[in-house]
Image (cartoon, rainbow, N blue to C red):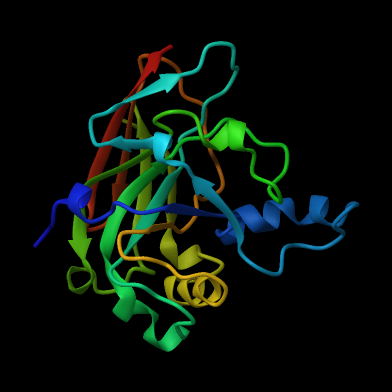
Length: 219
């Protein structure tokens, strides 16, 4: 049985960059360059601030003066209870359920330092339409993500391609900070992000979670 998302997913929105195998492999060459000279060895985290929260059927504002706006289909994991130093083996016991996230962003220059100005515009994180309980999803690492723009399929991937699965993410994050009930872990967006324009309708479909719909409107 699905549950009302807005009553449960009320906490911090944690994003994870570079968590799809295809996207990571596309970027390996640039990670060899200074100043870092290696690929990230820990999850690359960012936060979607409270002003970014948006809903199913909500409008997403295309900011004036920008050239590109890109949706990002992602599986959202809603934390059920406070988690601190949780092992990967126990991690799923701390999950309330799953939802769809569309993590909108302006194009970024560096995956090591996700830019606040690119990630945290008003309405840039749509969630919904519902929270699907853990026991309703047989395997969250075998879900197909599809992105549609004006009914055209423009992006497709699967959570089988996550670099770090949900238990590992929860274990690594809770090692140094407490995840609280209601926090949402955005498990990553796959390679192949596309541009959208004002007037477009954007849909994200994830196996067993339904469809999240938003419209792009001009500022």
